[in-house]
Length: 351
Image 1 (cartoon, helix red, strand yellow):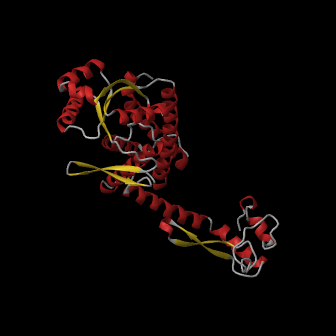
Image 2 (cartoon, rainbow, N blue to C red):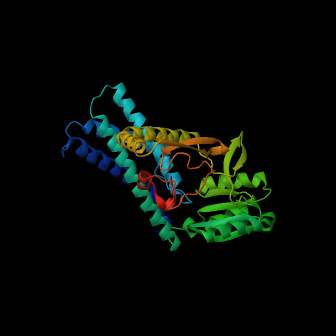
Image 3 (cartoon, rainbow, N blue to C red):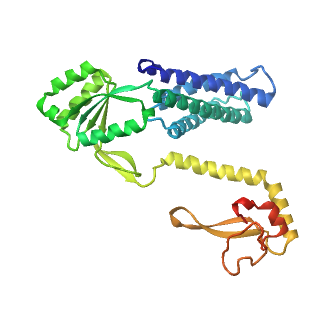
């Protein structure tokens, strides 16, 4: 895929998403109603498709940005999927349309999300591969400090999957000697896809001129900080047009993602408890019947921010097995009950 064809990628991804959405709708109908005919679902399919077009165009979930980060792309798509589900359910509720079952809706969205994970993974693998082979690259020009530029070039050389080719470097001395108009002419001649500005103290007039030039000529302008973050993470904030880099030792997670993750944890745990209740009851009875003592064993662990919490698991050792303090278990540990040898995983030393 050459650089000139990459502009069609968002459109292709958008159409593929629409196709996968309808495949998911059709398969969910077959699964729930055992019928190959749409019957009373055309209205639902129409609402779902029109709603997806609107939501996807707003959230731009079909865009594949550099660098390739599959997790970020999936997270953005998942939020789009949630917005879409809320919109569709809202339309059905307010218009009082009884056009499909809840199980069909849930299966449709589950299949769609699964299809997208597979599709995005394949797409990212393909883009990663061809960029390492030298295709689908963007031409870039670096302007400014030599040391910062060298770090940037080194990063691009270590990650060919970014897909950047350096065609020119304009040093600070060259900028001081040349006028802004001369620099603009130089950029027009070389016609880069992106410009990276590497300055410790950049002139405001120069920056504004380059941004305006980029907007007019469809050239993306990037400003590179002189900070070295190593393994830290940065998030850009904007305080009344003053850009601030918020730096943490761990990657930041947005509030929406945290709410979504916590909701998934709670729902998945409840479903597991309900679905697994018969098995847990059998384990409880057998554990109680095969050895004296409580069926559940409580153990303290350290959680987030060093906050202690307790975990509960089915007891596989005799009572007072750790009366002389915690000890690592072994394959032939005499503290393990006969039933415990069946339910533990010896290779991990669990009890």
